[in-house]
Structures are given as C-alpha cells and as structure tokens.
Image (cartoon, rainbow, N blue to C red; front, side, top):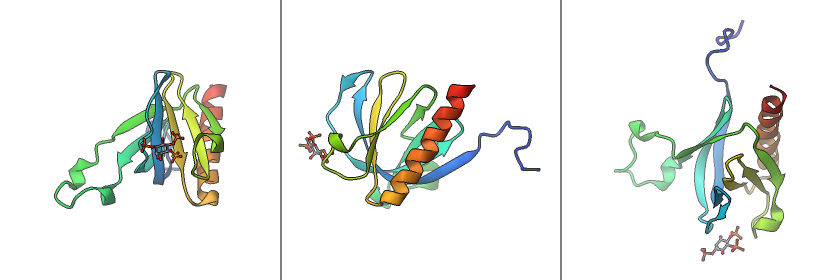
Length: 128
Ligand code: I3P
C-alpha cells in the first residue's frame, strides 16, 4: 500500500518553476508584476514560493521556505488566457474569492501539464 494509505497526508501532485503574476485581488484589478515562482500543487492548494535563485545568497536560507501565498483550488476556474498577455503559454486561475493569477512558461508541454493537473484537482473537488 502507499505511504499515505490512511489519506491523512496531502499528496504532492506537482512542483516546478513558473512565471506568475497576480492580476486581481477580491475582484479588484491589480497592476501586473511578473516574477519567477516555485509552484507546488499539494492537496487542494496551489502554493507559491519565491524562486530561491532570484534571492541574494545572504537572503536565502533553507528555513526561508515559507510560502509567499497559497491558493485554495475548491471552486476555482482555469482558462487559457493568451489574450491577457503578450507572453505565450499563459493561463488564468481565478479563485472563488476573486483572486486572479496568470501562470506562464516558455515551454508549451510544461504549461499544458500544469493546466491539466490543476484542472483535474478542481474537477475532483467539484465532485466532492
Ligand atoms: C507591464 C509589463 C508587463 C505587461 C503589461 C504591462 O508594464 O510590461 O510585463 O504584461 O501589459 O502593462 P509595467 O511594467 O509598466 O507595469 P505582459 O508581459 O503579460 O504582456 P498589459 O498592461 O497589457 O497587461
């Protein structure tokens, strides 16, 4: 059986580097500020960490791995959003609370994997 056969530990579904910008907070539009983010999909959440490589050597400590923010995927909506950016391979994630994020990668196969994996989590939560 799996190490989590009791289902108590949220399963890590995916992790990697993506370009990220928040474009709305509670339905209010924000100015874009793209940055590279370490993105982790675990359980019902998408968790964002600052890219360690973008930090100065002195600012980076292993214990500094506190998430920057976290998104609850229950009821969230996912849409391709190439019309919302001059960048290619962009999708938009909208939470029930009206927070909106764009996520982007130069690698099409990679962004498709992220889209499909996040969508499958949203679908699973919709069925619960
Ligand atoms: C924005 C910046 C963003 C760009 C955005 C600009 O300018 O260039 O990268 O988004 O375009 O407004 P500033 O740095 O002055 O805020 P994309 O890279 O996603 O195109 P937008 O206003 O058309 O969204």
